[in-house]
Structures are given as structure tokens and as C-alpha cells.
Amino acid sequence: MDQQPKDDVDFLEPSILLDETHYQEGYKNGYDDGLVSGKEEGRQVGLKMGFQVGEELGFYQGCLDVWMSVIRLEEGAFSARVRKNMEQLAVLLSKYPLSDPENEQVQDMMEKIRLKFRVITASLGAKMEYEGRPTSSKQDVEDL
Amino acid sequence: MASSEEGLAASLGELRVEAAPLRDSEVASHGNGADIVDDDDDIWDDAGPDSPGRGSILDREWAYRQNQFRKMGYRDGITEGQKDAAQEGFNIGFRESVHVGYKWGLLRGITSALASLPDNSKEKLLPNDQCRGRLQDLHNSIQEISSDNALQMFHKSTLDNNHPLEEPHIKSEEVEAVDSSRLETLPKDLLLLLHECPNIKVQEEMA
Image 1 (cartoon, rainbow over the protein chains, first blue to last red):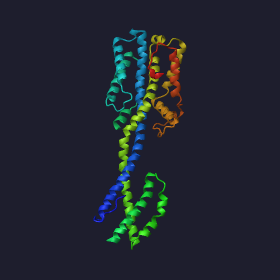
Image 2: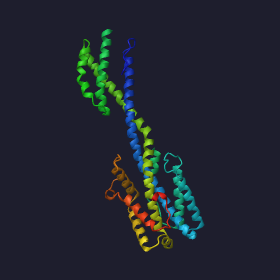
Image 3: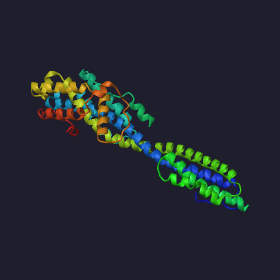
Image 4: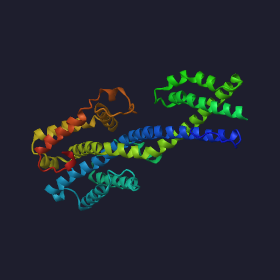
């Protein structure tokens, strides 16, 4: 609001400039407030998603740890084919970038892990499933 | 022309002082709005042209218009600001919770896999009846907690740590009854059990 109307300009000219200035002032205040509230809203979604993704991957890893412990004691406890699938699951899990939610590969990787896990549990005849898999998680990611 | 210019300058002056309280009500930040309002009439009277009535109507028109533009700007700005900060906030939240969730998932996976092993494998990993009994208890306790419950418990524990969080999305009687400290105690119980079962090797994150 420092600008004063110049002597030689039309009356409406400075009013349009003022409108623009006021808009910009409002915009700046809004933008700053938006950064704060947007960050917190994003954090809420992130907290939820992070826990869910972490829990699902931890579940698969925990199962794998137990199976690997069984194999160490008795290699023949599982068939060679199942052992191979378990090793592949181990590789997939170790590659998952847990701290990099922006990585574009994560959905694909999660799908591969789920599939591999299902193949293994089907072969074992174990009635094991990750029941907590959130149906909304994929949607949340796509929303962002 | 001299008088109309003077009038405009006065209008602008008053616009400026009226702007402060208007903006205050919008963003609720500064606290000196009232003082300025008191001076409002004085400023006008000191610098007033011949027709003050007509001037102040124009003046209010200006103030209204100015406020409208501020509001428009604010609305556009807040939307854009939220958009720009959402991903950053998401990443922060995600990294805050992913390892807590992972640890909880490990617990769930380890107990589920152990419980579903055939008896001969189970006996090799869990050396005695007492261990097998404790595993079964632990497994049962964990099965009672759904993933939504676990998330809720985590949510509550972050609240207890004085992090500002919104109202949780999931609400039910069952969830209210869940003791969020179990998110802490159950992993400890498993660790105690695993100490007695050296044949079970798990991720370091569990410890």
C-alpha cells in the first residue's frame, strides 16, 4: 500500500493496482497458512499409510524369519520349490524402500511381494493371510 | 483537481487503517486493530474535503472491495499452499510411523508363522511346552488386535506423546476398549520368549 496515485493517471488505474495488491496480500497470507495446514493434513495421511505399509511388510518378513529358522534346522522341511520362493520373497522384501514413500516402484513391489507370499502359503497349505491389508491404502496413494 | 486528489489521498489513508482490523479478523494474527479504529474518524475529519458524507460512502465501498480481493487471494493462496505442502507432510508422517508399523507387523508375522507350523517343526524351534504355551497365548492376544485397532493404538500413543493429531478416522466401542500400551508390551513379551528359543532368528528391528 505504499504506492500513491500518480498525478497523470486515471482514477481507476490505481484502483486496479490496489485490487491486485490486496489480492496478492491475501494470497500470501493464505499460502502461508495453507503450507502449515496442508503439511499437517499430509502428515495425518502419511502416519496412517506408513503404519499400514510397515505392518504388512513386517508381517511378511516375520513369517519369512520363522520359515528360514526352520530351514536352518532342517533343510528338507520345505520342498526345494518352496525354498526357492522363500528366497525370492527375501530378496523382494530387502529391496523394498521402506523410507521412500515417493518411490514410484513401491506399488509394483508390494504387489509382487503379496503374490509371492500367497504362492508360498498356498504351497505350505498354511491358512495364513495378512488380514490387516487395508482395502483403502491403494486409493490413498493414488489420491496423493 | 487539487481537491479531488486530496480526497483520494485521504480515502487511501483511511483504507489503510480500516484494512488492519479487517485482515485481523481473517487470519487472526495481530492484536493492534482496535487502536487504529479509534483514530478512524479523526483522520477523516482532519483531511476531509467539502463533502465528507459522499466521501465516506466511497470509502466503505473501497474497504469492502479491498476486503473482497484479500479474501479471494486468501482462498486461492490457502489451496495452493496446502497442495504444495501435502507431499512433504505425507513423507514426514510416513517416516514417523513406518518403522513402528513394521515392528508390529514382524510381531504379527512371527507369531502367526510359528503358530501355523506343523508340530514337529514347532517343537524344534520352541524347546519346551512352557514356551509353546506362551507362544499360543501371545498369538491369541495379537490375533485379537486387528490392524485397524493397532493403527488406532499407534495413533493414541502418538497423541500421548503430545504430537498434535486430528481426531482418528476409525471409531468404535471395541477400539475404545483397546489398551494402547499393548503395542509396547506384546513385543517385549515376544522378545522374552525368543530369548529362550535361540533357534529362531528374527530381524534386528524386533529388538
